[in-house]
Length: 154
Image (tube, rainbow, N blue to C red):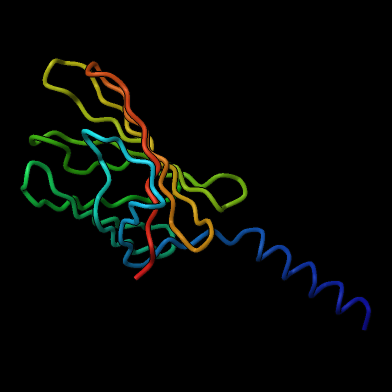
């Protein structure tokens, strides 16, 4: 009986350790819990995430200069390069990788710029106090910026 309980405990611990955070859901921006740039923010007002096994689909709803737009990206969670539509008909190359503890997901994207340089965007997703937090940083020939975006699940 002790051996059976010990084996069961090991199996449960192994499954729990290998389980990754599931970010699936419809999320609304919580500006009060976020740290956003005053003049320009990259924070979408709403994000819809579908996570299924190794596949991740992220739909971001945002607006810029009074124009609403939607960004649809698809990733694999194995660190392999994924290509999605970028800005102004460019191709955005991204990788999505979970940290060893499986609670933090980092998506790193590279987007070609018109001046021949490249923009790098790094987004780190995690769940904290019931909110989805995205720590985002971007660097390009235009400069650098970073934000902390907090989202409430709907």
